[in-house]
Length: 415
Image 1 (cartoon, rainbow, N blue to C red):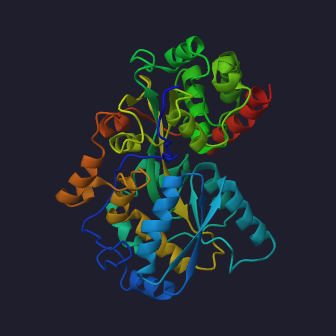
Image 2 (image 1 turned 180 degrees about the vertical axis):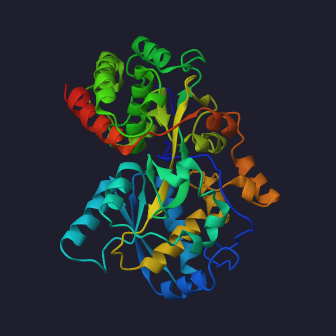
């Protein structure tokens, strides 16, 4: 078994496209040109002395280091204390909010901010349990195109100013180029064919892990002949016609997966550890934009590459959202603004961050700052950002995600 240093790459990774005019040198500093008169200054004044309880997926060590290092330090400069509440599934935070509201707790709630997207946002919004209408008061949103389809809608649901964009995820396949050829990574079909000839060297995380769910959707779209037919509202008939073929295909390839498919990693960090240790040779990830930095640091071998299937790759945005009953809304707004600021995004995307890219529109940034972001994304070890963007498939409404996760468990995991 070849030796690889342990990698704890990000589960969710993303290509920078975002906003802005002036340079926010301090993420939490108000910019009167971008916020309503006195709006953010008043938010900062109210937030001073507050502790913000941020509920977020806690299984990514690099992201945890960034959050409890850079982010916590920057918040402390404006008198806000950060408490990261690590969870394994975003639904935990959403259910906590809904439970408190059902019990009559319409204020002073336990959850101040959630890292969220897709089906979990839909649940929160449909329950009228999310704060809305404050995005224009956040200086950092000037650097984002809030009308962009992937930002104006979240898995098909209009965001309507109820989420603050944070990161853009564009998926790709990470692989060891000494074990797989360009032909092997050209399509899902060729990858599965390679797996059956090289048993034990491929796996994916069990949904509802964010990356594992993406992998299953990737296989679903490929099996069904494309993603476009599933755009728009959920169509039960279309799903029922396509899903059995997917599960038949996944069950056929399952014996060639890691541990013969008798078990699946519970989280993406486990998948990445298997790759780092040489136990597997390929995996799908949303963290493709950080691969080059990991190779440059020596965390991954120089034989590591990323690729995009010829039929495209799934991409979407993740957001932060404030529950309507949050106890510390001002501090949550300061945190959401900080995460979206160019300095924080550069730190996050860089080699000492989590390797994530931002929802920022680089065309809105000063040329020198935009060049810093572009330099981070240039690497011979990973797919160029322009190719990732050009091949990105549209995301489907959350009902498809929910059904696929539920039915994958019943028809693949439990078979």
